[in-house]
Image (cartoon, rainbow, N blue to C red):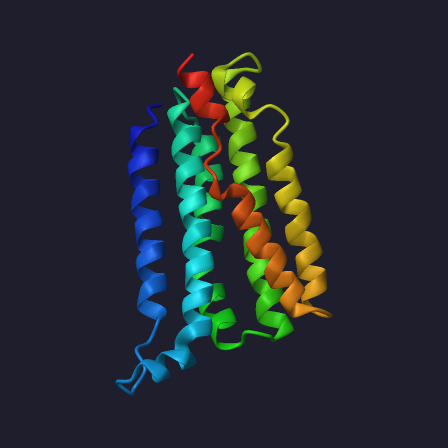
Length: 191
């Protein structure tokens, strides 16, 4: 089965996720710059989530670009990833209005953790489909960065109940780790 429809559908879902997030940001009732302070936590949460969705979109693009074919299992794994990413706007909105509250911060981390696991599953199914000697398998390697991300999400979820701000810092740290595009796949595709 061709990967073109998977790419097109996924790109559409990524665009909808970002659109929903920005629509969740409400304009302050007052018309002064000082009124923007009240929406700053929502804006900051939006920025972090936008970066996360952008990271997933970028890496998803590279993952599929390095692939030739998809199977039914890969389609379901892709939907699994998109499901968890579709919850990012909800988690973002809840954290944005409850900046230092443990439950929303833990849920945000749980959504990121599940998205990370779903991405790993998709990646592994694509590698299995294309073989251990494929460009994709060679480029991904052991995926230490991906596994470290999942561990940091899990730690942050636990920390959210005792130290919510530290948990938020861990989420930001993982985003910063991935902000620089992962060049592993690009390197193998252009050799």
